[in-house]
Amino acid sequence: MGEAKTIAVIGGGASGLAAAVAAGEALRDLEGAGGAAGEVVEGDAGAARVVVYEASDRVGRSILATGNGRCNFSNARPGEGDYRNAAFVRRVLFEFECRASRYVPSQAKTSTAYPNGVLGFFSDHGLMWREEGEGRLYPLANKAASVLDCLRAACAAAGVEERVECEVVAVEPPRAEGASFTLRLADGRFERAGVVIVAVGGTVARELLPKGLSFREPEPTLGPLATDPRWPRRLDNIRVRGALELWRPGEKMTPQELNRNGFPMGTHEGERLVAREVGEAMFRKYGVSGIAAFNLSRLAEPGDVLAVDFVPWVRPCDMEAFLNRRRKLLRASLGRDVMWNDMLRGMVLAPVADVLLEAAALDGARPVAKGETAVIAPVLKGLRLPVTGLGDVRQCQVHRGGVSVRAVDDRTCEVRRVPGLYVVGEALDVDAACGGFNLHWAWASGLLAGWSAAERLRA
Ligand SMILES: Cc1cc2nc3c(=O)[nH]c(=O)nc-3n(C[C@H](O)[C@H](O)[C@H](O)COP(=O)(O)OP(=O)(O)OC[C@H]3O[C@@H](n4cnc5c(N)ncnc54)[C@H](O)[C@@H]3O)c2cc1C
Image (cartoon, rainbow, N blue to C red; front, side, top):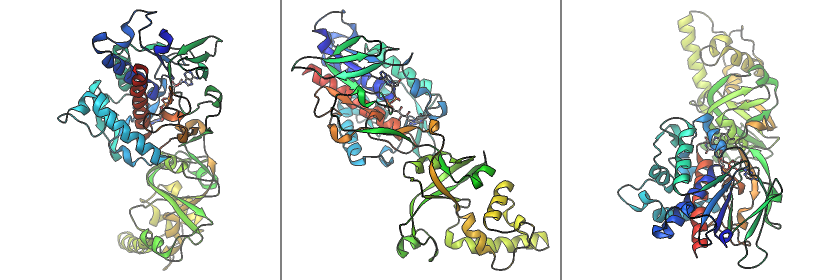
């Protein structure tokens, strides 16, 4: 039956399109000179085909929204991405690279091999890119559409069929050996396929999947942090290039750890530094947004303290000396006593200075008395904002949860209990920090599953 030779990809986003291209190309190659997977006559029982079922009115919408429309599609050093379920991800990426050296032409040639198979795949499909800070890779055309155009052209060349406005509500496994999967569609119809790749993204619903699959309800993450709004409310929309630290009360740091991080002894009693992110932060009425806050949101718990460091280039233990030198310099240039407002002017914006002075209970119009720099130093190095949770969840970039990685074979992304069913991308319980790591995972897991699915069909 033709349906047994259908690979159904559910979801036409990043991982789904990558899986569809990989499966279509692999089928074409495995069929030898037989032409593209979709070039066969409809109804031909021998015809292998790849069909993408996409709920929205076009494939790739999710890709167009990434990186503020520019699509930070990968990272030059994807291993550093601090993935959730890192051991599983490492094994999948290892297997992916092994397969890439077989399926991705430029990875097979030592003369053109790229640092990883994702870049080799995109290069083979015509995409050019450039690197920005921290290894972030963006298409040369600086538009996400450029990435999607390459993927859609690859889909067309591999004979992949697209079914848009076609939401799949349930995937039912074959009832007997050799039988097909049943896909129940939202409009009541159903279709069948021999192999199914679930690539529906982070909002994957438990009801879509066969019963009994280990699953964690997805929740948004990688978004702005909500904090006590007292200070953020007064700084709404102000951007700061500094550092954010996440502190967890109720835990401790050893003197060696304090020393290594440059914190003077006696500070941060009864709390532990969970993580520090250097980068841009933007104050919002409800808390703090920006990439640094997004990354910390993956680790934050209500009750933690977010500390905003406005002078990240000065170590905490050197801060007092730095301020004393500044006071001396300003006194010489102003020719009078240095006021607190003078001390902060030129270092931070005026509304920030007002907040910092109020937090330190200092009067900006008063002269800086000897020894008083010790009062402002800890506030400048860490304005403390108690974390209450996530800020605006609509801004969250990924979901945590989905299908448990334990349910999936790390050599193929195939569900162990249900042969022929694959789960990829964010539908798996994998997420990472900002920087192109999430899309890198979507492409790599999608490609690996696509190649594996084609091999299974051919076998
Ligand atoms: C605003 C924003 C910006 C981002 N920027 C970046 C970035 O620059 N770099 C980066 O690495 N990551 C970024 N991410 C994260 C990245 O987009 C995701 O991790 C990635 O797209 C996940 O790929 P996926 O294929 O698993 O899911 P998606 O790309 O979300 O694709 C899922 C697809 O499945 C479809 N679908 C869902 N349910 C069904 C169903 N039942 N039947 C049929 N179709 C269905 C959806 O319509 C969608 O097209 C960003 C995320 C957001 C929200």
